[in-house]
Amino acid sequence: ITLREVLSSIKRFGIKPGHSVVIFGCGPVGLTFVRFLKLLGVENVIALDIVEEKLETALKNGAAHAYNSLNVDVKSTIRKRYPEGVDFVLDAVGNNNIVNQGMSLIKDGGKICCYGIAPKSHAEIDWTEAPYNWTLQLQQFPSKVEEGECTEQVLSWIRSGEIDLKDYISDYFTFDNVLEA
Image (cartoon, rainbow, N blue to C red; front, side):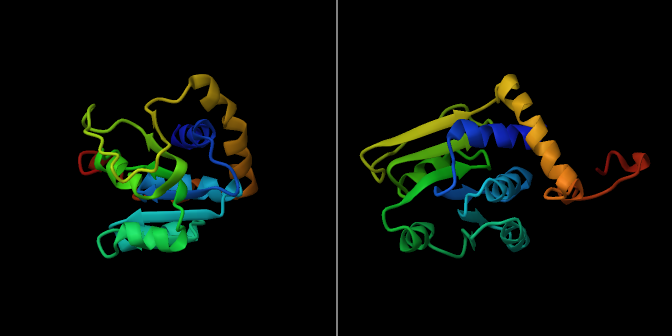
């Protein structure tokens, strides 16, 4: 389900080859975004997280660059590579603060995209650092039709070996250890 949701979200967000994307969060969803964007020909992907191992995985999955957001000044690091800003900032964490942080990273006409539902259904948006023209897009639930249309592409990637489902399993537990899991 997550694989189809992520692919349908990429399509709904309008991310295409040639676009630049900063992804906040390299958990299962963020890493799926990284991998799928690479498979779709999007080369300019920067991944941000606070866990070094996740950043290494993001690079293996196709991110052009990966940074620990606790150890770098995110704005200056991104603006050094993209002085005009990036096309997309993608929140794969579900943290409302990422919307405000993303304002200083996008270029004029850029888009901040939020995948999923944040814990709080409200946020104070401060666009003082945003360009004149920008878009905020929330993708809380994918359209079942759009998600279904992505099934064949996901299955094709699995069949060809471009996606290994074992990459999406972090641990194995016996049923006796279900509470631990």
